Image 1: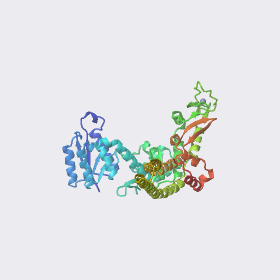
Image 2 (image 1 turned 180 degrees about the vertical axis):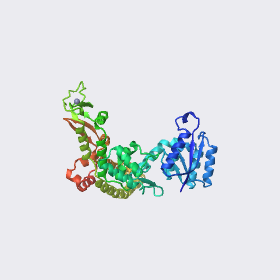
Image 3 (image 1 turned 90 degrees about the horizontal axis):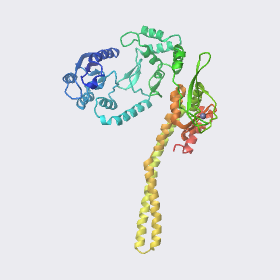
Image 4 (image 1 turned 90 degrees about the vertical axis):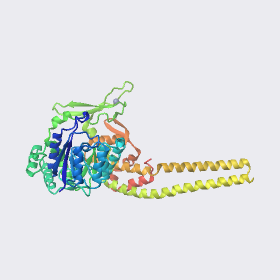
Length: 505
Ligand SMILES: [Zn+2]
């Protein structure tokens, strides 16, 4: 079993005022160790700044690690360990040389990959200048992970992070227990507090060994990860891990959750989702939302024109119920969404195109270069002919200008070509991901994501005669113009259009 040191630090500096006290850090870390089955062999505490290298207790701890008395450190956050490049570098060096095999922080997820070390060094406070750029890289890394179906964070209850393969695997002990819990709740016969008691009796306990907090249980019940999908930043990605439950069970859980919460109270507090989403089709003014109560006490939200235009005479009188607008938004998304099978087929096609493109690009560029060379030789010959007296000045000038024009044209083409490269394929790929996401949003009834998707997929969203309409970007029209049965069947028709039309430019 891996041995860990706990390290706690807090200095008296002004900027550290917000940091947990050493006592509090210790308490949290001991809890964390217990929860994660970490074997702690010693605790180190220090009241010093980490901005300058040379903290005695920190040094002593690293010495102990070099001797092999522990190979892991548990600290509240990386900035507790180091805030200067010397100490940060020492920690990373020990990771590189295998003296440190694990670094754990309740507030920071670390993996010993090049990327993980990169993030760690940023957290250590070095390379400040590159932070922005880095954040971009890290986000890109996270997106790549997501596309490979990997969760870029700590495994949820029932799973664990496999350190060598860097995958997420079922935890033999807790996986069946969490599965049972989820299935119990899906039956609709359990309230949150009942399931809390059930989990406790199964041995699924909170930090302190008591019942798990209701808020944590709620999070577990709504995590799409359990049915095989990763939700990150409001988007869904197909996970590569072993699902615990079916999508059907997940949906049942969501229904059960809704039934057990108090809908009346929730409704009045609910936000107005589609405020500012569309404009009035008659006068062009923004749509507003209004709450109304039926005599039964039931609340409805309506969207309508503000009728505030002084110059335009607005003729729109329709009020649209929020549910109706939501339905229309869902339908619009559906019409331009790309089903999973299509995405797969498209990606295969793109791979092929990419190969072809790489090949034909080389041929195309070579061809242009040869033409330019040929014109150059002809220009030389023409000058020779003129100098030899074989051509009159007028004739020479005319021929020369023609050639120079041609040469400039080819050179321009070549520059243009080199600049653009495979840009269109990249655009195509991005579009496929976006359109496929729309499909997921519809499937999961994620209305705020659908709203945001439509905002970026086109423009001119108007509400006229109670009907929502918008102009999609060109590339979406491809999907829009398909007959509904084609959507359900093979994507061959769309492929034909894609091949024959240059709709991605
Ligand atoms: Zn209007």
